[in-house]
Structures are given as structure tokens and as C-alpha cells.
Image (tube, rainbow, N blue to C red; front, top):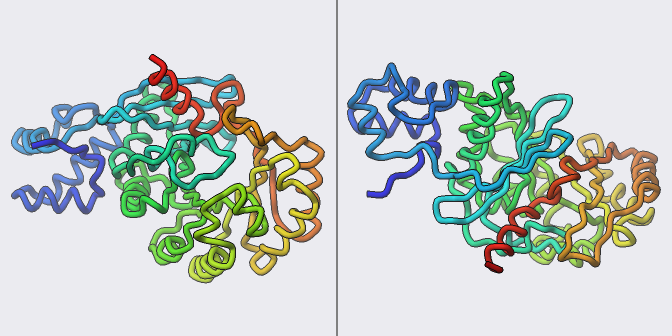
Length: 355
């Protein structure tokens, strides 16, 4: 029988699993505490759990399915991890340092099928979804790395913005969110967690109905269908006529601000005309809208795109402000390493093929 990672279980799932096998319900609390508060590396470190329960856990579960392959550290404190999965696939996870705390960007799929023409993540097509444990283990590995530094630092924020489309791996995403938010574990507040989507409208409806108050970010990148389709093929399936009603539904249900990601591509989507169109697109719910203007990280395989110059970014920013849209400019972390999402993985995959 092949063993699975215990990190794939929510607390309720772990509790049910133990009770079904004749264990007392309180055992789940003990095990969960050792996993997420004390962060042990083996089951036999769980000192107040009886030997029979330890044997049961060891017979059915493992604690590690991710191995650190490469770690890149930036001068600004950003750390990019390249993890190898049990099947040999590679994924990226990034630790970023901000004034408000430590944020980790996690990956949800091996590769990406969304097909954004400017993105390094989509250079390699999706081969499979990550299971819940593989998403949880990204956070646990980063936290254990911090623990080893002896500085009493903890992951305080999570952004689900790594490789892949999170809402396309919906059930595993939701299990991950519930594990992270559980107050018996890492207890990362829902309002400190952001899930990003390229605009899967049907899944936004589902996400709006979930009883969890995590933040939503939408990768918009263009204010009209023609332009958005030219750089994001997902817009063919979910054009703005489908996406914006889904966003309306989410806002009516949650009454929570949405962040709109807008990558600044020189002479593509960075003109005043696009800024005005974007303001008009968002004006219906502008009090619940925040536009994140993102200077583009160049990718060798996408030489047709360049970063907008600072004057164009500033003019775009000011135009949005003049039209009542809250916005900001997000300058990248890890500029001296492989800053673009998916870039490190893509490079390593190429090296492997070349050998």
C-alpha cells in the first residue's frame, strides 16, 4: 500500500480517519499540534501520542513528499525555492519579506494551461494538479526553513499566485485554505490569504459561496476583450461579458475588495486610453476595487514584450486615480534572481533536457 502525506488532511478529515480506526477524538488535536505548532519531522517525535497511534500513522502516512532542489536568495530577502515532487516534477515557491510580515507565494499546478502570452509559468504546459498535501507542504517547508534560522519568524501571509490556475484545482485549493486558516494549526488569518485567478468565471461563483473570508485577486491585464484575448487566451472562454457578472456576484455575496492585477507591457496595454477603459470597466464597484499595476519582468522566451517605462506607469496610475480608482504600483521582489513566476523552473527543465 502506498503511503500518502498526512498534510493532505484537514483537521476534520484527520479526526474522522482516526475515529474510524478506533482512536479517541482527542488524538487528532495531539497530532495536529505536533504537525503545525511544533512542526516535527517524524511521527516518533510526537511524545504524548501512544505507540499504537504512532504505528498507525507510520503505516499509512509520510511527512515529506517535497525535496528542496534549488534555493535562490535575493539581496532584498526574497527566497525562491525549487521543490522536487515525489514523481520528479518541479514547482516553485517564493518567500517575500514586507513591512507587514512574511508572505509566501504557493504553486497549485505542475505547469499551466491558461496560456498568458507574457508569462513564464505557461512555458511548460500543465501535466497535473498538485494535491492538497503538496500545496500545504510548500508552506511547511518554508516555515521549517525559517525555524532553522532561529529568529522566531513565521509565515504571516499567503498568496496563491504561483504556477497554475488555483480555481482550476478547486477542491485541493479549498482543503489547503482550511488547513492554513485552522486556529489549531498555523492559524494564518483568512484576510491574510489571497487567491488569484485568471478569470474562471464559473469558479468565481463557487468561491463566492464558500464560508471563508480569504481575499480574491483577478488577473485582468487588459480592459477590453480584443486586447485581453490577444495576451490571455482564457478570455476566449471567459470574456469580460462572463467575467464581470461573476465578479458582481462575488462582491454582492462578500462585500470584500477585489484586487485587479494589471501587468504593464510597453506599447501594448499601458496607454491613457486603456487606463480610461479600465476605470470605466470597474466604476460600478470602484469602492471595492484596487488595481495593482505590475512592472513586467522580462522573459527570454517572450521577447515581444518589454516593461513599460516609469513615465508610462506613472501616467497610467494618475489616470486611474483621476477617475476614482484606487491603485498602486507593485515593484518586484527578487529582482537579482529569477524574479518572474515560473522562470527558475523553466530554466532547470531546459537544463535537464539538454543533459
